[in-house]
Length: 284
Length: 313
Image (cartoon, rainbow over all chains, first blue to last red; front, side, top):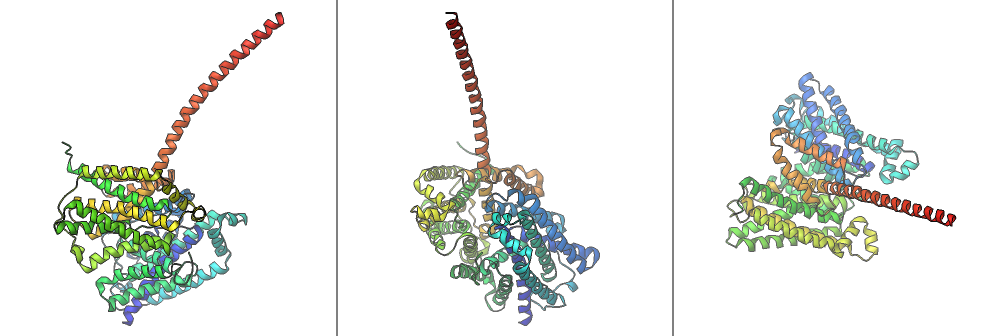
C-alpha cells in the first residue's frame, strides 16, 4: 500500500509540473497553452533518446530542460506573438494545432510511434504500482518541493514575478510602468518550457512506457488541477497534483478499477460545482 | 436519380454532422458561454435514438426522441451557468461529456466499449442536406432576431447587457438548448448513417476537431462553421498523397490561417469582399470625381466666356 501511495505521489507531482507550466502562462497572458502536454511528452522522448545515445540520465535531463525551454520560446515567438491580439479561443486552437504537429512528428520519427521506455534500472515503476525503487522517487519529490518554493518566492518577492503578475492583471498599466510586456510573455513561456522539461524527465523515469498520445491525459489532469486548485498559490497546485495522484491510486487500490477514470471526472465536476472559485478560493 | 458514389455520400453526411456540431459550438460562443458538452449531447441523441430503433420504434420517432433527450440534457447542463463561467465552465462541461462516455465504457450498457451495432440505415446525403438547409434557415432567422442581438451583447459585455435589461441566465440556457437541438440532430443523423456506435468516437479528440472547424471558419459568424468544415473536412481528402504527413500539413494550414486572419475564414472572406467592393466604389468615386472635374472645367470655361463677353460688352 505504501509503495502504491508513493507511486500516486510521483504521478501527482507529474500532473503538478504540467499545471505549473499552464498556470504561469495563464497568469501572464490569460490563456492556456494547449501544447504544454505535447511539449512534456516531447521532452520525455528527448530523455529516452539521449539516454540511449549517451547512457547518462543527468545529461538527458539537462537536454530535456533545454529542449523544453527552446520549444516553448519558439512557440511564443513564432506563433502566439503573432496572434496575441486575437481572442483567446484562437490562441487555444493554434496551440492545439502545434500540439498535433509535435505528436505527429514524434510518432513518425521515433520508433514508428510504438511505445518506448528507458532501461529498467533507470525507471521507477510508477504506473505498474509496483515498488518505488531507486533514488529517483526521492529526487522527484525534492525537485518538486524546491521548484514550488522557488516559484512561490519568485512570484511573491521577485521583480520578474511582480512584472508577470502586473502584466497578467493589466498589461497597459504594466507597460506604463516600464514593463516590457512581450518579454514577460516570453519569460513565462520559457518557464513553462522548463517545467515541461522536468515533466518529461519524470515521465521518462516513472512511467512504464511513453507513447506520443500520453499528452492528452496529462493535459486534462493539468487543466483540472489548475481550475480546481487555482493558480495564484503554487503550493495549492502542488497539493492539487498530489491529491489527484493519490485519488487515482486509491481508486485503483480500493475502488472498482474500471471506474477509476469516471470517478476522477465526477470528482472534478463536483468540486467545480461546489467551489467554483477553486478549493482554496483562489480565483483564476 | 441522385445516386452518388459512397465516398461522396459519406463526405457530405459527415460534413453536415460536423457543420451541425460546429454551429452548436458557435451558438454558445456567441454568448461567450464556454459550454462545451456538444459531443456528450450528440452521444445522448445517438445512443437514445439507436436504442429506440433497436426495440422497433420507427426511425423518425426515435430520432425526434433523441433530439428531445439531447435538448433536455443541454438545458440541464446550461444551468451550470448559475455557478460557473469561462474556463471552469469549459472544463466542467467537457468533464460531463467524458463522464457520459465513460459511463457507457465502464458499465458496459448499450454495448459498452465494444460499441452498439445492428442499427438500421435510415439516412443518406439527401436527408443530411435537407437537415442542413433547415438548420441554416433557422439559424439565419435567429441571427436576425432581437434575441440574437441580446445574446451577442451578452457575449461582448455581460454587465452592460444586464444593465440594458437582458437576463443572462435565460440567454445562456437558451443558447444551450438551441445547441442541444443541433447536437441532437447530429447524433440521430450519425447513428442512422454509420449504423455502429463506438463510444471512443465521442471523446475529446472529436471535440477538438469541432473547435478547430469553428475557430478556423470564424467563431462569431453564422457561416463560420460552414467555411471551416468546407475547408478542413474536404481538404484532408485531397491530402491523401501526403500519407502520414497529412495531419501535420492540416495543422500547419490551421496555424497559418489563424496567423493571417484570427477571425477565421469568414472574416477573411468578408475582408476580401469589402476590399473588392471598396476598390469598385473607389473606381466609381474616381469616375465621379473625374466627371465632376470635367463639369467644373466646363462651368469654369463657360464662366470665362461669360466674363469675356461681359468685358467686351
